[in-house]
Image 1 (cartoon, protein in one colour):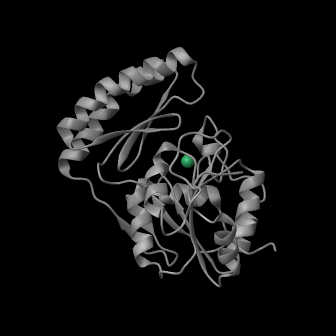
Image 2: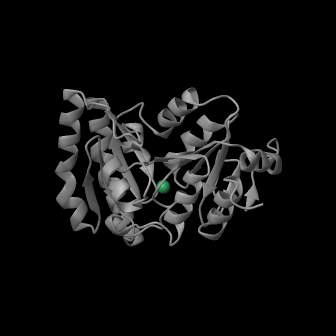
Image 3: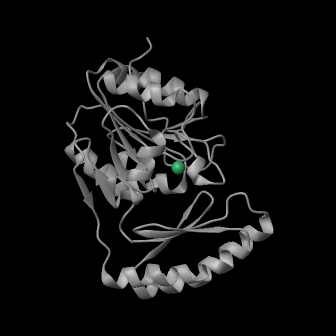
Length: 261
Ligand SMILES: [Mg+2]
């Protein structure tokens, strides 16, 4: 564990959160709650984490998952036994605990752009990578590929998608293990900002994430809550605190959530 922003009184923030009757906990999924797998369908939460989230939810912590995955996919993998709020597709969809949902819609132009982005599917596969077609994005994964293949996939994807982004009102973003073509303006900051606007001023808030795509969430939560980078290695970040999963993740959640003294 390492505190990264000297201006934050971490000890006091932890105590205030632990003693509060309610809290808002925003969590990324892949790399944060679940270790990476080459096949994302196998990315299950750390052992014991689901139980911990259920205990937190039972003790006044509102748990919201903010993920790049579609919400229903993330819900199946996490499989908690309480009604969960999920923001999926990098802020592009929101599912509330009561089952009601909101989804951002693609313009006709953007839909054509995403369809065209799949034209490189076979070329990416031939290099050992994988193209994932989502409702609001197309992702090119190169996790687990040799360095030379990673370089080739990135060059291919960038070359093709940068032009599509300009033409079809889309945006190319980096994530840990690949590149994604998606809608501009969407991102985790959007989800975080909406939840901050809805939250009472004094509510303790934390946002936990691991990836480049979580950095705008860390920036958005700054001033209102704690940004926590969950990652085996430290990297340049806007987060206030760095913790290494899984041990320090459990430590943080239990302590911040008021489950330990
Ligand atoms: Mg992640």
